[in-house]
Length: 266
Image (cartoon, rainbow, N blue to C red; front, side, top):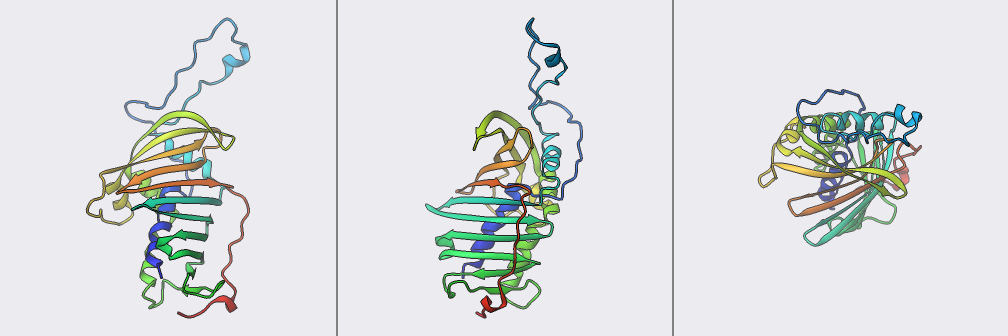
């Protein structure tokens, strides 16, 4: 089975999304404000109503994370599509996730998964359907068991802890710079370049930097201009390029473990 490949791919989701236990810790930024757009100079045609409106202010390094957390407050579910290209091979992961409690239902395609793999994560238990199993059947992996896959699963569950994800962002965020306002799938979004210190982010998650890792990683993030939700994230690292899109924030979803009759032993 390509379980480790599945874990490595899935583990990119929370960092890309910044899924979180949402709190608001706004702090004033010391120094340059990269994201602020000055108000337009009023003209004779400016109405009294428009004069009352606040100038447009885009997010900056200090306000980016607090705004993102506030936007995600109460949004306990999301649908995502992740496309990764590495070594000339493409893999895709589509699925739905809830954040509290953490649960996932994923469909993974690509050579790393022997063509195709499905994964359901419910109550810290993973259920895998792989190419070497009968169609519709799953194996069960409990992180507390002696199963050789258990340690890897436990590490993945730790990575999916939303609180730790934002700890990593908070510790590693170096810069958030507004780029431009665009339209994505009919929605007005703001594009940002977000630079993260890799060593600081990994340390906050209790992990060590692997040899060859870059000092910093730049995420291009498309965030809703009004709702501050992330709808697209792009990044490249060590020859791997990834594009993730998100939708249906906060819409009701149901993620269930497979029926007992569909669980088999390896």
